[in-house]
Every structure is written in C-alpha cells, then in structure tokens.
Image (tube, rainbow, N blue to C red):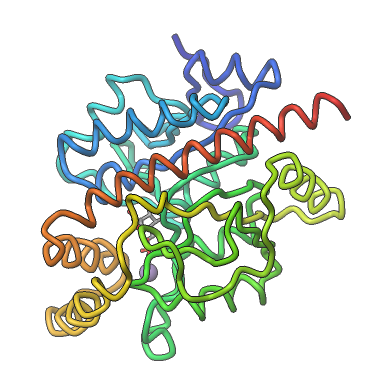
Length: 312
Ligand code: PSU
Ligand code: MN
C-alpha cells in the first residue's frame, strides 16, 4: 500500500510514511550500492541484511530508488529483489535525478541523490558504508564526487564508514572542512577507510554516546546551518582488511583505469571491482560486513535523535 506525495513524485511504503507521521526514527539507504556495488544474489541478500541492521539499531529503513518517474522512499522485499536482479539500471547522482525522473524507467541512487530524496521526504538520517570523495590525482582530473557537494546542500545527517582508500582521503577531509561539513567519529579516534579501520588520518572529533551525537546534530542545525553532518562508524575489527594489503592493488587499478580510458562516474565501480579481484572476494565480504555495521550504528544514532526530539 503506497501513498503519493502531493507536489513531488515520492512514493512511500506504508511503514515509512507511518513512521514519519508518528515521529519514529527513519534511516534512508542508497540503491546504487545494490545495483553497482555488489553482485546478484549477494546484493539482494545484503540489502535485506542492511535493512534488518537498521531495525536492530531501533529505526525504520527506507531504501531509496527511482522507478517509473517516481522516487521510491522505502522498498518492499519485491522492490529490493527487482533492483538487485535487473541488469543495466543506470547510476543516478544528484544532477541526473530530474532527467531520469522525467524519462521514466529505473535508477539506482548514489549517496548524493539519496540525500536529495531523504531531504524531500523529511528523513533526517542516511546511512551507507562508503561515501564518494576526492579522487587520487584530482588536481589533474578534477574528479570530486558529487556526494561531497551534496553534503553542503541537504539537511540530512550521514552515517558512514568513511570513504574507500581508492580515493585521496586527506583531500576528502580537506574538502569537508573547507565546505563547513561537521565530522564526528563514533567510538573511534580516526577517520575510517571503508573496510579498513583507519585511513591514517585522525578525525577532528570523537564521540562515544549516541545522544551526544544527536545533540551535536540538532545544535548544528539550530545554528542556522541547513547542510549535512557526517558521522563515521568503523567496521568491526574482526571483519577489517589491512590497508597495506590493498594499496598495491589500488595503485595498479588506477594505472589500468587510465590506460583503459575509464573516467567519470564509471571509475568508482571499476576500481572497486579490481580490488575485489585481487583480494579474491575478501574485500567484497568485508564490504558486506561494513554496510551492515554502519546501518546498525545509524539505526542507533537515529533512534537517539528521535528520542531527543521527543524530550525537547
Ligand atoms: N563507495 C563504495 N561503494 C559504492 C560507492 C562508493 O565503497 O558503491 C558508490 C556510492 O553509491 C557513492 C558513489 O555514492 O559510488 C559515488 O560515486 P562517484 O565517485 O562517481 O561520485
Ligand atoms: Mn566522480
């Protein structure tokens, strides 16, 4: 059962619209990681586990996607299965959203476009394991993910495990600082690197308590900021991959990508697949584990945030 939003083409599942109406915590999730980040059938299985992890944290999951000229806010099991198993669903970032909606058809939302949808839908939290960032060699390619730009535009708190070390994480941190995007690391001193525990960079702030994080987010918004707020939560140590193990693979993949002429929005997937190959699937497994642990942390923080709003 679904209700159509009045002015924008949003289609809510009943569970998500009920949760929003009654002030229950909701966490938005992207679909590009389902269609492009992982392969069938592990992608469908992981998407369901990620939703279960949000619930285990105490919140309602709302997986975002585009279909028939509408934005899905929340997916049923059948929706997840369709997105996971349909080949060739295009990756849709913020700038593509209007075009893909006008055309009809399906679209897999990145972090950036999922934030646009979450903001429209009134969902203050979003979770994904790996955000896009400033690419290595960006001083020549100018490849900076629109995810970072969208953080400056959408009033949604993002819980993630940092960004992948296929990127230049030092420059990614500089970009966030320049663009006034707050960054807090949950129960860790360092900015994590997706399935690696640390990027080697310290986080500007550490907070161990969810309610304190919720208060920091609300205070940031109360100061008149209507941008995002980044919270990182690292992978469990037992699932983590040693960054030295993947560094050579990344460097080789970057050289190969340039030789193959891969650029633009195709580069992220190309590099990730190359690393998966070298680690013989270990990184893909860690990828699934970190998606789940991030979703659980987001569920907990969003629940603390909803509780805080109720007591205010
Ligand atoms: N990082 C990952 N896995 C992913 C992505 C990033 O570890 O699947 C996806 C996300 O959907 C993210 C997008 O929003 O890639 C960023 O793409 P780009 O670098 O083209 O902006
Ligand atoms: Mn890019």
